[in-house]
Length: 166
Ligand code: FES
Ligand code: FES
Image (cartoon, rainbow, N blue to C red; front, side):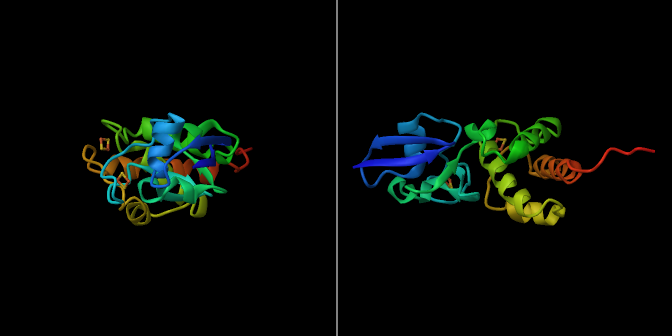
């Protein structure tokens, strides 16, 4: 069947089997490989994308179910829908705090962090841990990832603060 999905503000029209997942649609039909396939049954979080601003596991959603939704993948970081640079701030923080090693989990971690910081700009470390608890990282031990998200949160909370005039 022919389906249309808004991915990173582009309408993607492709012929797919009804059983194709959103993950496979993004990777194989659209050709965006930053959304990673890990467990492919909803456990690891490597396939996380934003669907209407919410972090979802694209391996658990059929592509046909996503028609009418707005999908943002890690490649959509610089799109107009990237919350005025929110994702860039998070990416910078991951680079600075060494929140990644192999990078396999990273796109999912960043999009999960984006979904958290959009609703909670001053999370505690515990809240960050809870938010990423469904995203598995085999490399970092998670400490640097939490550090990265805390740094991004700190920068976001100060983003609209007037410069000190003293
Ligand atoms: S690949 Fe989707 S949760 Fe693991
Ligand atoms: S950086 Fe390798 S799995 Fe997280």
